[in-house]
Length: 447
Image 1 (tube, rainbow, N blue to C red):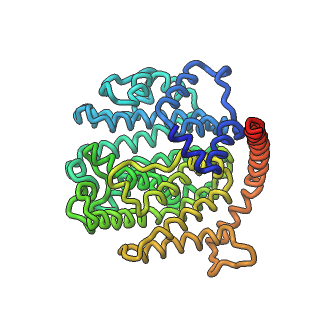
Image 2 (image 1 turned 60 degrees about the vertical axis):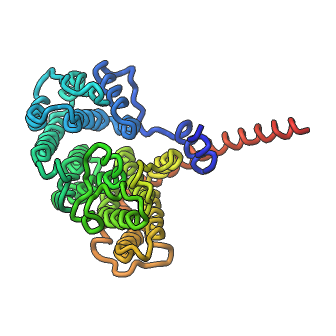
Image 3 (image 1 turned 45 degrees about the vertical axis):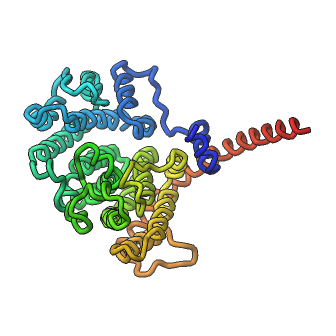
């Protein structure tokens, strides 16, 4: 009832929820009736272990749909081992390091998770994942195995790092490295798959996957900032000491000390972390401009628009010091609907960058830096989609290349936009008819 009232309080979000549920055109519909039982079982596992990615993965182009689904499940299994604190380090560490070798086997499963581990099914039923993994193209198998090897060893390194286990990450460099292992490597694998399938530009593999790294780090760092209170309750912390030590001697004090002074220091710390995350935004937008397949674009863009919306929600928000803060369900529906073309994604980013800038407080020691960074991002957006009758100042060769990339994919966005207009028309007609019926019923009852 609470969510329904929330939707009714925001009519545009209510409409978005209706349109998403009943009128959104799926790019590629999966047909369970035509696939092997083991593949069906894998998609069941996907739905059980992913609330946010399952629907988008199922709409991917058939060339990559199963490969990315299996990639997700393999990494979910790896993460379930790493995240389960009931598994002894002497069992967990070698298992993480050797997990990629399990992909060479025809059958293997693991029953060593604690009974309360919510995703343990992905390990107990790993046999079906292996069956479908071996059906993938060898090139796709190699990419999945390589990323599993790198991620597993990275996770194991952190388990053995006593300083990390006691005090979390120390420096921003450590923070970035941790995010690389848990998110950046995922992006690297997805990028390799998309480029190999010719669904993304080869440029994404240049500069040591710099743009790809920004995609992963932007998502992971946003989640880490948001999850401050939840992580404290779990007895861990990922905020880098190099940043939080500017504002307190003890990271838990932001939650425990309810004084105004402590809250202000907590908000200043959050703004410092947000400033760090905003440094990835230009690479994120460039990356998205180089994804050519519409379904892969959706898959990449939706998490990113969720991240910028989340960042704007938690920025200068004292609630995150005491509870988990999320964007509204209706906002999520609206973002999913409005992130199917590059121009729409860019508009979403511009909106939330302006929200962040307007929420800044003059007394915040990061006030000027936040303002400058937001200005840089808005100028970059202007170079991508110049305002009418304006020429961006200081147009460089690089920004010219960005515009060329956008022009090269403009026909894709135009085709998707036409489909969106049809959806909206059908949704508006139905909602209009419902409104007329309800109005007529009310008038009749009063007459």
